[in-house]
Length: 342
Length: 253
Image 1: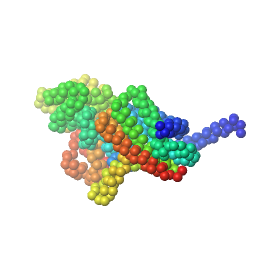
Image 2 (image 1 turned 180 degrees about the vertical axis):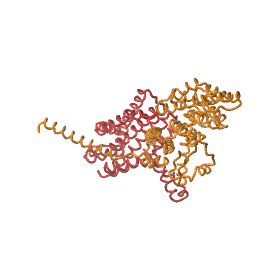
Image 3 (image 1 turned 30 degrees about the vertical axis):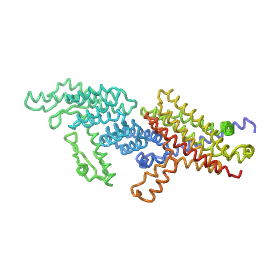
Image 4 (image 1 turned 45 degrees about the horizontal axis):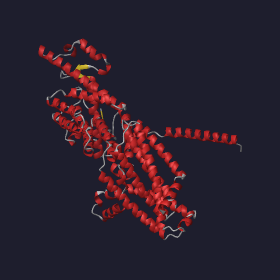
């Protein structure tokens, strides 16, 4: 066979083989529907995994961490945010590589962002034990007290405690000592939270962190607006001896118009108790509480093999109280057959 | 001098082996391709690249030790070239030791090459590597010396394929010895625990040589740990070489 004929034969064979294979590949991909939950159903225990990675546990941790990021981004943009596997994925990654600081920090941040404060704390405290020189991990714990547990009376003291650890371990300790002093002077925690989120936004290396930071900055700014309007409502009450019936009675229409001009800022209104509220703030609170309750319901199901019969049973078992619905004229609707909460 | 002559010849011969260059090619692809995984992380590029680079240095080093090491003595016997050597005034153990040292030198060159390539790649991407990285590469090399000694021992006892299977199994088992002492509570205090505890102490624990996670995360490792691990590896290496010499001493070639 002459050379040209050989070349033509090779080219034809290659074209036919790769073409057929590509066609079959596309057909197989279409047949296979990826179900995220089922795929993660087989995530093995990290203690067992450590022994069977052939010395590649840190590489397996890296690959699993990339999977965790992909999972989190996908869930974050879902309407129904369950984050069922987030805690176990973070635990497995850090179990395989106990020195993987970023996994503790980002994992802790993500768990706190979905309202699973206790899981976040547990992960971060394990991280502190495995990384005694890290300042980033106690800083993340401090953020939880500042951002998620602001209303808790012990939070300023715990925040100061963890910031002291951060100051001791970081290179620029003086910045944190000033902050601790401000806390002890009982400055508004929302201002500190705004500083944290603006710093997080400036240093964010990925879109997800940027998105979370921007959402929280908007939320904090709206909370500050709500407090400002509440001040006007209180002044009206003091002046007239009775609460305003509508928000427009207490707040200058021009100010309200400016605040309502940006659709992202929702609407300001007075609730049934005559307090100033904002729809975006309440929606965010509702979503966070709903996600946290959903997480607790699924944890209950994992332990007891069934969903709680009611939300009262859930909180009774956890020795806790059911959080009030942020909208005073609404209630939590729970379906015990599916474990869904609305 | 005889040992060094055999070692030099072994090195020259092994460095011409095509398998070596194929494995080096794939090691290079793995190291340079690790950047792609760094792109989809959230700022952990440096960590992931170092992790994968060191994993490539270790894994491809092991493959070279297995594929070249298990056929080292067998090839000489099979091609009958061993007669020209053992007919010379050379002890059989000198022959084995020379073969081992030649392959150890080759693996040292490969490890140094892939390790320094990884470090330069990390630097070129704006990352940093600390002293722990160098310690990790050193411990990888010491682990490869142990694997090579086992390969050479099996090379004088059995065929290359069976030898490769045994060495690879030993490599995996060496990294899984932790399971022998991490038993479920119901087995504690039983005969099983005694047996697995005994096995744990005799099977070489290759996890001791693995400080890749510390290197990737920039965590310092105590110098005493590195030194003791080197001593641990040396003990097993010498043990396997002695067994190899004994096995080859009376072998009917």
